[in-house]
Image (cartoon, rainbow, N blue to C red; front, side, top):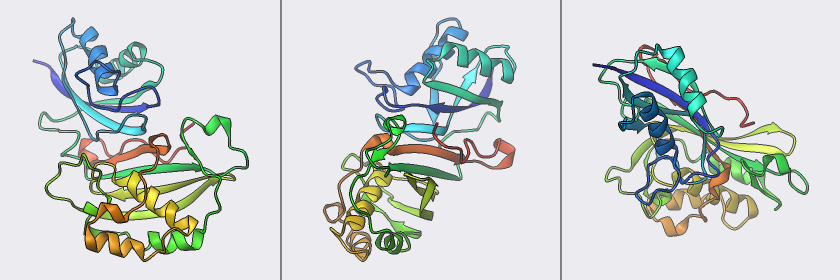
Length: 263
């Protein structure tokens, strides 16, 4: 009969073509997880559903998936078995039996993404896989003024990627801030009830353009009002982005991940 399990995941997405299994056979996080589950279930495919479809090269500390597990392993043993079978770049911090109706994406209440900038002189080689090296001057006051314009319930079409298929593009962004992790390492942090395709990377690209003086902070208002992607900045590289946390009600295991550094 089996049971529904929630699988929390952390991964270095550098060598992967994103979360979703690809037809052409490129390595993805979902494919690696399903292959590991198949080995525990005698070879048959075990479909999984993810909380978010991270792009190629994007990382996660708090991704969540769900699957039907037919193994007799209890949660803690299933967690250890998956970590042994998965590549070193993918870890399983927790497995939790959940109600059958649990769905990793639709049951999520909120998600937090973090985009890391390496602003150290010359760049930090130990941050190279997880942070965008930013060597340009940056007007933090202008960025702060732009960030203050973002929170609220809005149509985010102006920050959606070309591949976005969502018909309803209204989301509530609760948090938008720039934080200092340590000297030479900063991060944009965004928390919302949902995100559109490339939304965070387009936000970051626009904020960095504002920080360089290409646009003024008021450009945010024009992009939101016009719902025009061409008014926004370039899409920031994927390697700086991490799905940090997915929040669920306590009855479903509470939030994943945490606010720990990426390394």
